[in-house]
Amino acid sequence: MVQQLEVRDVDFDELKRNLEFTASLLEALYTNGTQPSFDVEDDLQIRSDVVPVEVRDWLASTFTQRVQPIRQRLEEKPKFRSIVHAVQAGIFVERIFRKAYSTAMPDQPAEVINCLRDLDRGNFDVFSLDAVSSGHSLKTLFIELIIKHHLNSRFKVPISCLMSFLCELERGYNKHTNAYHNHTHAADVTHTVHCLLLRTGVLYWLTELEVLACLFAAAIHDYEHTGNTNNFHIYTRWVRWSELAMIYNDRSVQESHHVSAAFRLLQDENTNIFMNLTRPEWIELRSLVIEMVLGTDMSCHVLQVKAMRSCLQQHECIDKPKALSLILHAADISHPAKPWSLHSRWTPRLMEEFFTQGDKEAELGLSISPLCDRNNTPVAQSQIAFMEFIVEPTFSLISDMSEKIVIPLIQDTTCSRYRSEFKSGTEVGTETGTEAGTEVGTEAGTEVGTETGQRGLQWTVADMVSFRSMWMRHTEENKNRWRDKVKNGVSHSDDSETQTGQDTA
Image (cartoon, rainbow, N blue to C red; front, side):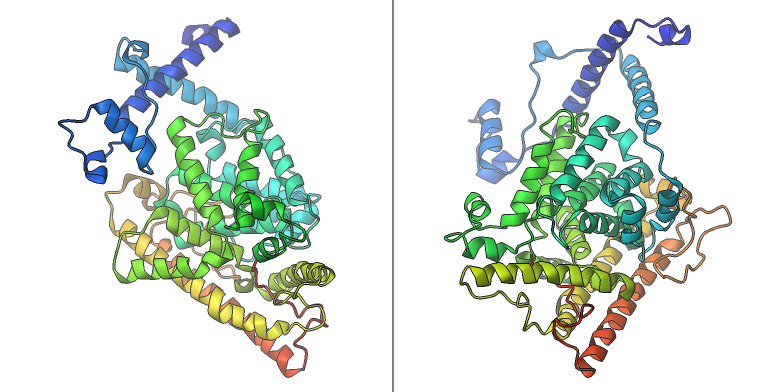
């Protein structure tokens, strides 16, 4: 195959057959070498000396929450003549795929590229991106982020599938023409997840697959949102709007639909962006995405916060899915922790959704839900309470959690991934021209990099400190804005700017 390529005399049918066979061989070697062990004896109290292996495997796959990989029959397992050939073939295939999946991304207009220069900043303006991308902020942002993190080449994401998937995703977000829960909100949350991972240093605690899962979960987390709260679906099911509540048994109704409907898109080969994931990768990604999206159910907030707080107090090891679920939840309620110029644009959109739901409830003869009455909503007071009791404690917990995760990484110089990403000063800037080494969480644009634009290990702690000061400053400034409105007698929904950022859906 290599010789054919060198002399440019390629039989493409033969090349395709050989590549397919090579891929199957490599996957077989990987699967056989990474099969997890199952402590079925401990979990189910089984005596291994009297229970056959096949039976123990069946018990593990049926009665525990561990997934047993499908094993190949010994007589079907392909073999290389030597491990050297396997390594050589693996390198060859990886080079071909990396080249194919890293050079075919569409070019962006100059206005979009200029807007994306601020991608790593906490004050990134997703509204401006939506304007210059002609209403495609989610698609533009997601493409930029997977390129930035090299995920498209690492997981061999077909470009045509990616473009088709993102078009369908945006179409689903705009299905119900929501003022707030639409593709722009999804783009904002996706950016915020990226920024939280980067600015807290948690990014360097994750594998590439986990980063991919985080960005994907953020992008789909409100897919096909109806613009109503879960309680609306549950308590009106005997009158109208009953389908989702009936399907999902009144449990995380919207969130269950978001993740289910998004994964349904992947069943079409034209939109299956994960078609080249291995079986273990797919299982891990799907499990993490489901937990993260279900964690955006606001009724889970207290349980999430209590569980993480207890973990930090007892010095337990932090569970990655729980940590990432909390980060996505924080991103979902984050705009009160952003500059007023952004916060004040999000809140009227959300309130319009609330008021629309209140109108429906009044039409059905039901009690109007809190904050959904157009004529009697104490917006400013509820906003202040939302920041003090929900947003600030959540972001404080994120900061504490991040320090517990990242500081040991800084101290552990034996961590090869961390050393290569941080100690060597690998540049974190975007490939569209973001100047790495600027603005570590402050909007003042503090210079923090080296002269070559690389981010070094020493700036990790600075990032964490500036992240904490950033959200504290913004929430305090925003609360003061609302307090001024209360003093001026503007505390209800008669002022277009006096709206709440509380996301109870």
